[in-house]
Length: 171
Figure 1 (tube, helix red, strand yellow):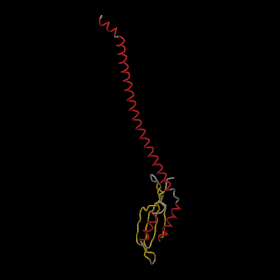
Figure 2: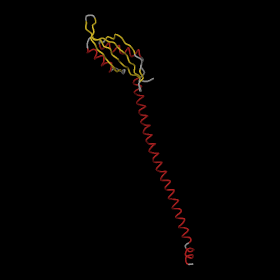
Figure 3: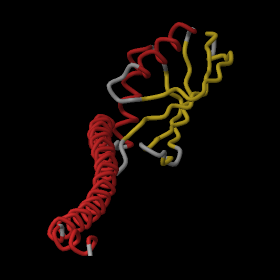
Figure 4: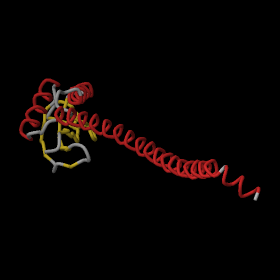
């Protein structure tokens, strides 16, 4: 009876001890679940922060694209031809013929090529023409140039075929 008496005396202590153990197990399981949840939230937070950085970059690049596209502007073919004519006149170049080539769509802009047949009295005049074309307020590129000697009556001249492309924004 000694054992039964001891159990009866400490009955409240044993019940309290069992309750404490059960509470500790429950608290440990809750803590474990919350730790997992916290790790998942931190991982999700990092993913969202990376998305925000990407969205900021996309926004910045979109603004840059819009700026460059507005700088290029849409081009009117007659205005481009008139501009090339003025550049040729100030460079001492005679434009024999201008042949517009069909526009080419590039990933970020439109390319408006022209085949020019020109004549000049010197290489210097051709060089000046090329320089003025490429430094024009309209954005031009000299794609190719083929210079050959020719005769214009009594004078010796240079003839050249030039492929000039104007760059413009997409419509």
